[in-house]
Length: 95
Image 1 (cartoon, rainbow, N blue to C red):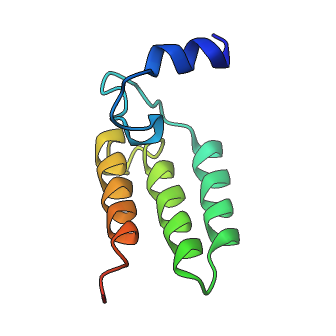
Image 2: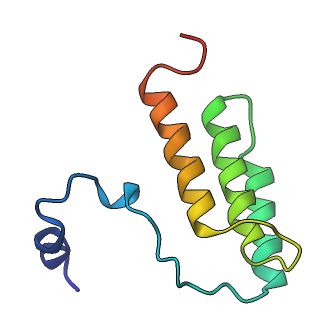
């Protein structure tokens, strides 16, 4: 699918692609290597800024999708990220 066809397909949508709910039928088989890599990247990007901590938390939650002991879903991650972005857009929690 080309970029133009993606744009045409999404024409008229109220929300950008990153704000659309994920496919709830997606399956995430256990993948220890993927969990390890995602968590290493999460640790690497964690820093002093709120953005780096938020990104780190998101990566860690995504790693839970591939961890048999993880307790999350794409929908939960999506809703959490959307909530964070909405708060950020409104100026944060401590306005």
